[in-house]
Image 1 (tube, one colour):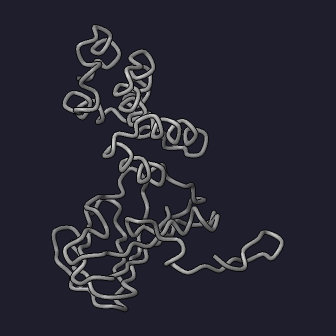
Image 2: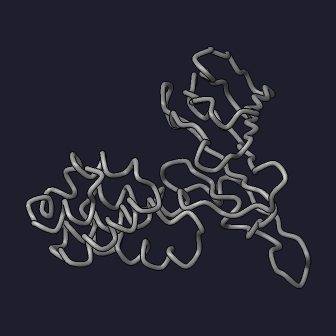
Length: 217
């Protein structure tokens, strides 16, 4: 990264400098952008998910995607869109499910988002994106540290509490896991269904407090 600093009033960077090993360039977080969400993803292989299938109902965000290299195939509301470099895909409706798969190696998509009429607030998925690979490699203690620190950063804490419960359950910290799981479900009741089948929570499902804390299950 070059020429960055609050005293200058601006920052510059290259995507290759910001991108992690999974191809995610956390532009908003790394540059400290506060007014809007902005990130980029680069695929190593054809067929790789650049924009994972999701909707923006929890955030209410509009999202604009710009293919800046390569080509991708989008699906928005069930409609397929072939998107060569230079193509813009603007998803105005937060409820529409969308995803994008790379058609060739090196395909890069820039995404910008925010909620109409409201000041932008960072979303917890930024931390969860770093945490999920730690779960895959069994680094639950490290995941717990990141998640705990993030609780003071984001307004939407439900998935942070949920993933923290998963990490604590894996680490044998039953009391803390149950408390964070209950907090997650209070904020987002739909997570109760996930808790009932999630392998990461298997260690605490037989605890008699499980059903009492999460009556929605």
